[in-house]
Length: 116
Image (cartoon, rainbow, N blue to C red; front, top):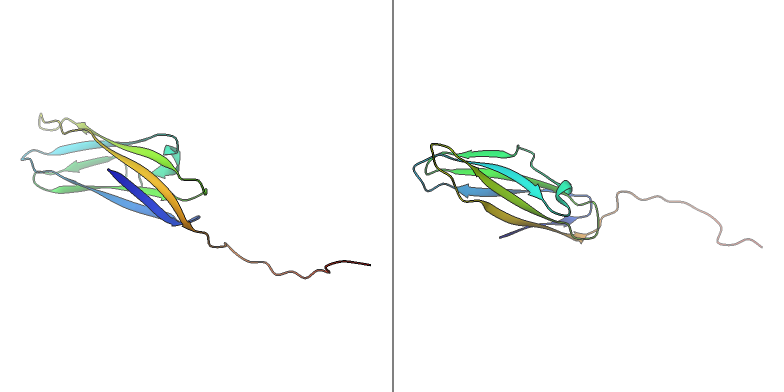
């Protein structure tokens, strides 16, 4: 599935990926960001998540919109064997879109339009 990061230029957006564990065994995942713009995305709460049996876990993905062009990356969640159980490898497409541009500041100045 695709996770979209939309907002104003220079804004920071955090998305949370919810992972459910319907099994009676603990699951653990390592999160890896790969792709063209992977360096622009980050995992602020770390790259590992452990999900207790019949519970849920969360992976936070953060992105700061620095450019007008859309950014793209892939979030890979690779299972670590816990209690002898491997979970499925999960992939999420990460995409950004600039919705508006707000100025960081304004400068007022006066100057003559022309000189004779």
